[in-house]
Each structure stands twice: as C-alpha cells, then as structure tokens.
Amino acid sequence: MTRDRLAAYLPTIAVAVAVLLAWELLVVAFDIQQFLLPKPSAIFAEFADQVGLWLAPDERSILFESSGATFWEAIGGFVIGCGGGALVALITSRWTVLSEATMPFAIAANSVPIIAFAPIMNNWFGITNPASKMAIVAIIVFFPTMINTVRGLTLVDARQLELMRSYAASPGEVLWKLRIPNALPYIFSALRVASALSLIGAVVAEFFGGPRATLGVYITQEASAFDFAKAWTAIMMASIIGIGFYLAVLLIERRLMPWHVSFRVE
Amino acid sequence: MNAIEARGIQKIFNPGTDEAVVALQDIDLQVAAGEFLSLVGPSGCGKSTLMRLIADLLQPSSGDLRVNGKAPAQARRDRDYGMVFQQATLYDWRSVSKNVQLPLEVMGYAKAERAKRAQAMLDMVELGDFVEHYPWQLSGGMQQRVSIARALVFEPSVLLMDEPFGALDEFTRERMNFELLRIWQATGTTVVFVTHSIAEAAFLSGRIVVMTPRPGRITQVVSNPLPYPRDFHTRSDPAFHALVAQLRDLLRDAVGPTLAQARET
Ligand SMILES: Nc1ncnc2c1ncn2[C@@H]1O[C@H](COP(=O)(O)OP(=O)(O)O)[C@@H](O)[C@H]1O
Ligand SMILES: [Mg+2]
Image 1 (cartoon, each protein chain N blue to C red):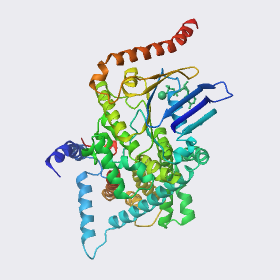
Image 2: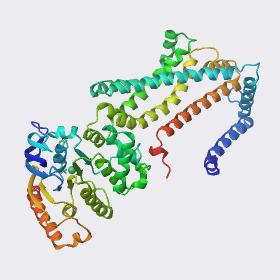
Image 3: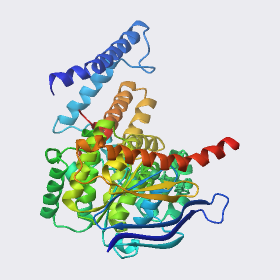
Image 4: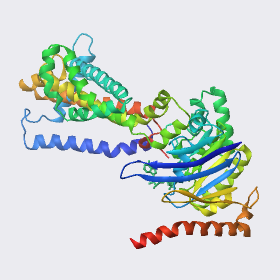
C-alpha cells in the first residue's frame, strides 16, 4: 500500500479507533454489566484466545469451526441462488412475454421476509443439515439477482441494438456481445447486496436451530449461557466474514469491468 | 446503378389509430453510387425515418425502396450499410480498437485481420495512438471519429449518418467536416447525411434534399455547384453563400405555413 492510500484510509481508521475507545470508556465509566455490553478489550481478549486454540495443533476452536461452517453455508447458498437467478433471468429475458410475466412475481417475492421460511426448510432438509441453511440463503439471493439480471439484459440502448441489427448479428451474438456486458454492472450490484444478505441469511437461519458448530447456534447458546464476550466475538467473526465476502465480490467486479464508471481513474 | 432508389415511399406510424402520423409521403429519390447527399429540414420532417427505412430498421407503409438494386433487408444482410448516430454509441466495455472491431467480429473476420483493419481505420481518423484507450477517456469528437471508423471498417458501400456532429462544438464540427470529406474521397462510399445545419450541408454535399414536415415530403433537391475537393476557402466562396441563402429561403418557405397555422390556432 502506498503512502497516499494509507492517508486516504486514515480518517476511517481514526473513526474506528475512536468508537472502540469511547465504547471501552463508557462501559468502564458507567460500570455496565458485561451481559449488557462487554468491553471491546474483553471481546478482543476472547478472540485472541480463540485464535490461540485454533492455531494450537491439538486443540479445537469451536468459534473458528462454526465460522467455517457458516461461511460454507453462505457461499453455497450464494452460488446456488445467484447462479440460479442469473440463469432464470437469461432464459426468461429471451422471450419478452416470459420476462414481463415473471418479473412482477420476482419483485413481489423480493419483498417477502424469506427468512421466515427457515423453520420450514429445517423440516424439509433436516435441522442439522447445512442444506437447510443454504436453501434459505439461495432463495434470499435468488430474487435480487434475477431481477437485476433481467433488467441488465433488457434495458439496452436502442441505438446499440440497431447497430447490431445493421451488422445482421444473430440473437446469440447480440446476447454475448451486447446484452451480457450491458448486464454486468446490474448483476454485480445484485451480487454485492447478495454477498451481505447471504451471511445474514445463514446466521439468522441458524438462530432457528442448526448444527452445533455454526455461528448462529454459537451466538444463541453463548448468549443464553451469559458468556457475552464469546457471543460478541462470534458476532465480530460474522461481521469480518461478511465484509470479507463483500470485498471479494467487489474485487472480482473491478477485475471484470475496469471500464465501469465507479472504477475510473483519470 | 444507383445506390439508393426510392419511389413513392410513404411511412405512417401507428396507422389506423388516433395517433397515426404520416412521417413520409411521396418520397422519390435517387442517390448515385459514390454520391454525398444531405437531408436537411426542420425537426420532425422525417429525415431520421427516411434514413431508418433505407437501413431496414423500419419498413415503408407503401412504395418501393431499393439499395444497391436489392430490397433493404437483403442489403442489410449483405452488410451494405455503415451507420453513425448523433451519439457515438460506443461500447463502454470495449477499448477503442475493440469497438472498431465489433462489426468484423460479428461478420466472422479472423483475429489478425480484425486488428489490422481496425488499426488502419483508426489511423485514417487520426486516432492511431488511442487503440488501447477506453471510450470514456476520449473527447466527444474523438468518440465520434471512433464511431465513423467502426462504420467504415467493413467497407460498406453506403454510409448512413444521422446528425453525426450535432452534439459537437462548432470548432470540432468544422474539423470533422474536413475529415469526413477526406475519408469519403479516400473510400468512395455513398454517404447519406442528415443535418440541421444548412452550412454543413452546403459544405459537404454534392446534392441537398430539402424536406418539410407534416407530412414529411421532399420540397426540392438542390445541386451544389461547388467543386470538390473543398477546403477553407470554400466557406468564403460567393457560390457557397448563395447556396446557403437559397437553402435558407427554401426552408423558410417550408416552415412558414406551419408557423402561420400555429398562430391561427
Ligand atoms: N417510432 C415512431 N412512432 C411514432 N411516430 C414516430 C416514430 N418515429 C418518428 N415518428 C414521427 O415521425 C415524424 C418524423 O420523425 P423523424 O424522422 O424522427 O424526424 P426528423 O429526424 O426529421 O427530426 C415525427 O412527427 C415523429 O414524431
Ligand atoms: Mg432525426
């Protein structure tokens, strides 16, 4: 990282440090009970312990195992849901009638709190089966991906379509050379939202019950055992994974479409 | 053989409804191969519609239209047209060179041949040093030159340009006019050029088609007495001023009755 970029991140880092310091001081000053709000230092200490356990050859860190399991549920659901959404969009947008007929349902489904289906997925796939969490994640991310992909494939500049027509291009060439590149920014804006949603979906779905070593179960159990430093550490892990996932999608987006407005550097 | 032959063309949008618009009526026009022809007239007189009929982006309601002796649809499948719009409509995700190669890709040219032709075309529009740039890194005039290179790279026999320089500033526009004439003379393409600007039409074309709206008709076809090649002196030639004055009168007559009608209602 260059000095300039470091300087650009400095304000963000300063805010983070200030918030953590204020949090720590408030907890100490008002003598807040740890089950209401643990000190950041306590959370970091717990985190350090867990890292130690994780690195030690003959020890296990339930926190890290849980994080891994939840991560795979989120990724699995993300891939299935986004892949499915994009595929369905690709098929329906081939026929205007079909995409116009399905879009209202997709938009309606997108405003349904799909997480409410978690208990039903537990019945379908089995409560300890990761597939039940993946299914919830997949359904959650399916609709935004499908909607945005259909938009990207169909909201193409009329002139650009006429240009293709003037070359006597086949529908397949129009799809590959115009519609899909045109849809990429729409798809990635959906994927960024989906990356955050998939982790939220997985953790909340686990609140309804799941395998022992998953973040949602870990958080509920440690919270009911009044070990709040542990619960908060797990929340922190979920945040780290969520942000990491989001950044990974952003990185791929930058690689695939460096030409896009949001990445232009003069 | 004429590049374009139109006989009794009529185009009605939304026929048989309340919103029916007679966009073109009784259009008879012959454009010789290699000719530079301009269409001028107030907005709404059907210039773009006529252009789009020729390009087979629309079909006439009646009349006979031939391009290179063929139906427009056949001419389009034979890749007889290059098109340039008011907006450059380049693909953001393609470099300058890849944009110019787009028609060649669709037409199945080999990769090496594509790159070679794109480079040659970009050299011709004086953008040879910008092949790896992306459209957003270019000025409006440069983008429009890329779109001209893209329209000419597969050597179409007819170049259709719909107000291609309408969005450019006056200086850039004048430079583009010179460049276009130079390219036209180098390639021998038939050009049909739509413009709002009387001076631009007078400077560029061999013949000027004056059109009037409601319904869109051809009022007169004016032959340009100025010889090619044209240069900086052309614009100060008395014949140029006489032509501009003549076109302006024709267009004033064309718009006049409509204004009078507007005042009555
Ligand atoms: N797709 C369309 N549907 C309905 N009316 C149209 C359409 N395209 C053009 N028109 C009408 O046809 C007339 C001629 O339009 P156009 O050819 O764009 O004129 P110009 O290019 O000379 O400004 C206008 O009255 C316009 O409103
Ligand atoms: Mg027009």
